[in-house]
Amino acid sequence: MIYMKKMSLFIVIGIVSSFLGCSKSEEKSGDKEATGKAPVLTLLDSASYDFGTVNEGAIVEHDFKFKNNGEYPLILNNITSSCGCTTPEWPKEPIGPNETSSIKVRFDTKNKSGPQVKTITVYANTEPAYSELRLRGIVNAVPKPEVKN
Image (tube, rainbow, N blue to C red; front, top):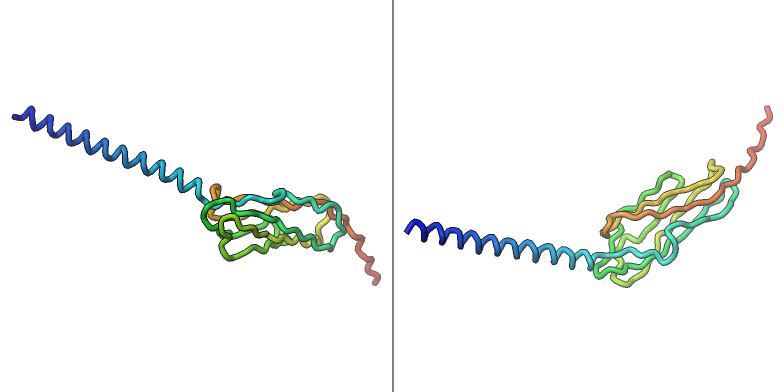
């Protein structure tokens, strides 16, 4: 009788373990499906824009065009830049699947000279959660007028 109770207990434990094991594998496969459907920010051009050579004081602007190649709406949560001289503008509303939009970046070259590389970090509901854009070029120094006393 004790042998039968132990055997029944092992059978119940085996069934519960099998059930929990199936449940976990189903969750993992479900996670993969969800990841495959996540929003995907796909740049239509390059992630780097070379503005060439400009004179100090110029305002450089560039639109980084992108498309949501995912199955769910793309939400740009925040965009930061490596310098206060670079300001991004982005759509605040969700970008639907297969829709396109753009991120406008302005770089004020005032008091900047020489080679420049500015990094813009885009935070979104994508995997990975952020991506980077870059502005690069050369700013020619403009001679300052002499101050006479």
